[in-house]
Image (cartoon, rainbow, N blue to C red; front, side, top):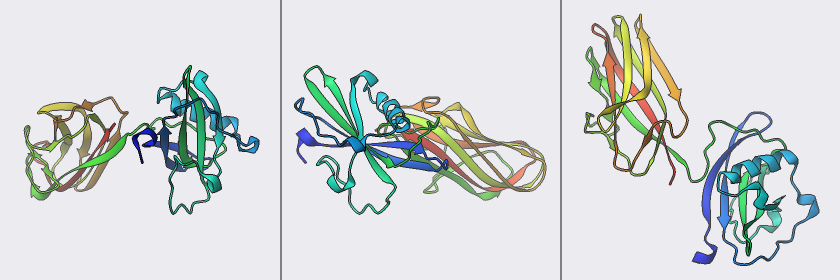
Length: 256
């Protein structure tokens, strides 16, 4: 594909009538003229879908006033900008948005998602090129001390050792599963960024032996990091608690 017609892919998430979480892609193309694209009148989308799509593309810098029309694309006649192979899900749909990029230039984007007649907004929406990844921390020994958790390859963490971020992004979730053997008190899973504690983690009240679990999520942008920052995890344990086998996932969301 040449530079003039290169396609960028973006990820979106919607909720269908059955509250089923769905995801899709959005492909954006640059047009070089104001030539109008022929539309079929029966391809016009419902008001609910139109409102959802307009709200999404507004996050891409496309104002509602710039939009000329929104139509559903016929899978049997895909535009050259959309390349989909081996799609067998009959619920999949593509929506084309024509808009005025400038007074002399028309542009278009394609939103690829599951076909629904009523789309609802979701607070935990992933937009643009956002990607979710997971940092794996753990500790597979019995101990009665507070310790830094190990990385996926078994390296002991510290204030200076952990995962080095390759892109800018945010910490958006954390989950922990561990086993307590004896004692009473509290266990906290603390996340450090460049050796400084962030105000986000897991916590357990220990009053009996057994398997414990906790998970928390937060919005993108609440705890941000930069490329090159180091993320590590620490288990802070009250005196007298014996525990083992901690598994912690730290969710990060990056924008490119």
